[in-house]
Amino acid sequence: MRVAVLPLVFLSVRSFAAPPAAASTPTAGSLLQVFLALLLVLAAIAACAWVLKRMTPGGMQGGAGMKVIGGVMVGPKERVVVVELADTWLVLGVTANQVNTLHTLPRPEHAESLQGANGEAPFARWLSQAMQKIPARNTTQQEQ
Image (cartoon, rainbow, N blue to C red; front, side):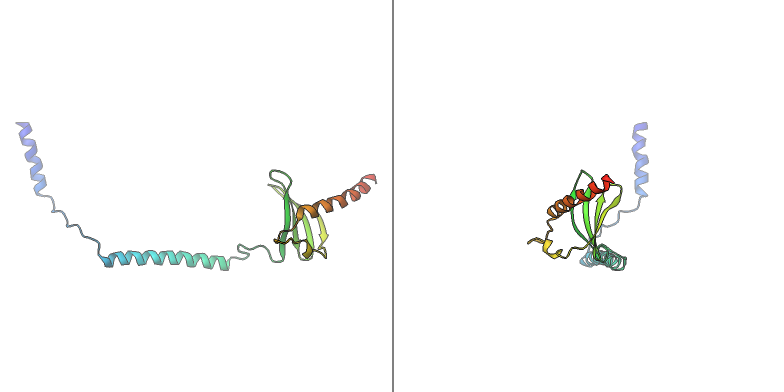
């Protein structure tokens, strides 16, 4: 008897339930509205990126008057880099933790001739020539 009464209880609850709402199909107007809203958001993001790029001091470009002439790896995380700043070339030792000025020299007169045919400077050749000149200076300093 209990088993027969239990389905009758659920029938009464179902009779008081609200009728299901009719499923609405999306119309062309609502799809167009969603598409235009998406385009508006994407345009706003692009405009914000453009404004930030233009207004940020320094931006993504290097410093004014500073140019990297060349560099060579001397270890897994160490480099020797030559940077031109105004009319001075700085030889910098760059590691993962710091940057040290190794040497300062005036800009050579033949700096334009150091550029290769493809626009790359033959930095390794220039560095080896500079290193051959430096030991003569270091031996005189060590003798004193």
